[in-house]
Amino acid sequence: MADATQARNPPHIIGEDTMANTNPFDDDRLHEECGVFGVYGHAEPAALVALGLHALQHRGQQAAGIVTWDGEQFHAHRGLGQVGENFSSREVIQRLPGLAAIGHCRYATTGEVALRNVQPLFADFEFGGLAICHNGNLTNSYHLRRQLVRRGSLFQSTSDTEVIVHLIATSLKDHVEDRVIDALRQVEGAYSLAALTQNCLIGVRDPLGVRPLVLGRLGEAWVLASESCALDIIGADFERDVEPGEMIIIDGNGLRSRKPFDPERKRICVFEYIYFSRPDSIVDGISVYETRKRIGAELARESHVMADIVIPVPDSGVPAAIGYAAECGLPFELGIIRNHYVGRTFIEPTDQIRHLGVKLKHNVNKAEIAGKRVILVDDSIVRGTTSMKIVEMFRHAGAAEVHMRISSPPTSHSCFYGIATPERQDLLASHMTVEEIAKHIGVDSLAFISIDGLYRAMGEAWRDPAKPRFCDACFTGDYPIPLVDHEAGKVSTQLSLLTETA
Ligand code: AMP
Image 1 (cartoon, rainbow, N blue to C red):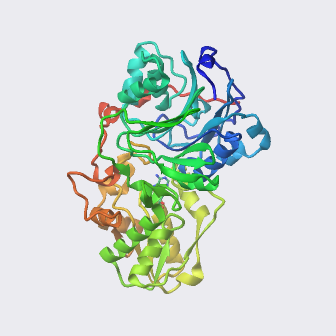
Image 2 (cartoon, rainbow, N blue to C red):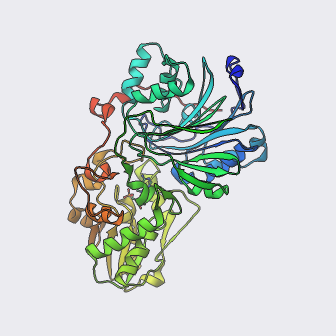
Image 3 (cartoon, rainbow, N blue to C red):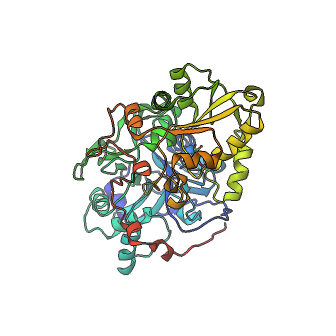
């Protein structure tokens, strides 16, 4: 890889390519769901990153980007849309030569879907170029941004990640690693980062480890990925999780680990297990699939009801429904058939589209339903739109009774650490009791797993309020990282929006 002399010749970034911004629902909220992937020491890093991002596509579908370093210069390709829309052609991959690369797939809740926010972000510094991508959400980014702007920083995007870039730029430390550490000591929030410089690949996980990040090995090459399923797809071996608060530096001399932050107790996001991560991933040593089955079994122990069949709401409700059915001894049936050619409904940003989306996505398998008492198992109720439509379809199909069991506690609080959730008032559980939600979605009975039941399924005796093992703020309102921006009010409206076409 590059030696220090190259740092004196600032590289150029070339090969920017774009798709038009076609999303009409932009506004200025910046909460993101994302996946990151990085490779160091392989002859075809861009191809590997594109494959890795394919496996992480569920973490963000609105934009994707890859930056490579070839020893002399950086190359980048970024675009709106899914990974396959941007990185399927051999030509694109050939325009991204190098020995190291990082990539990102992004979903900005209702945030600005402009090209200027598509990651990896790239900037030239005194020490040379640096590309960076981020999964998570910073909770004091507006606060820091205001300070930086006052001191003369010129922001190019509305992404919270750019705050890290400016903090690196304004750091007085000599070495890039120290500058990154300096920058991260000032930010609050959740971050799993992959960064690429002329000399090294850097991976960092925030001190609480809210978002996952794993390390893998492919021959001599090192790999960083949001989830272990992305290592599997490229045939890489899982090495270990990046630890909360750990910084990994991979360069021509191998791998180094630094622990620059004060140790804190880890609080990985429990929703990664319930819904967000792929079931074939192992997150912090725990299988997502097995966990979901255990939650289903726990749910059956807590709130079983007499019925004929157990039916999952596909796909995310499937493992919990398998666990539920096995525990209560009822047949597990595919009573809802999913159309795999439409995206996730929840991420469609208007109610109108979302309503349509549920119908487009799910159809009831009438032959299995008529005259039966049905237990439907889903992972969560957010706005209730999915449940309401599905219950209506079951009634139409002649179900004798429709009971709903949810493999998470009621989602009563918004996430500020990187999972896209609506404003609190739009979460049904923020203002309705379980009985009211049951009435609202039209079921004969409704039960959510209890928070202690969830912790039991995760291998704990109960949720110890003095030292909970996970971040479960969306269910408890116990936010482990201060919500600096949120508490300061609606500062987000200060950002100007930019619609960009290519
Ligand atoms: P809703 O229809 O608003 O109640 O949303 C609930 C459905 O959305 C469930 O079936 C979940 O599988 C799914 N879901 C929950 N959280 C999210 C999220 N953050 N992003 C996308 N889908 C989600």
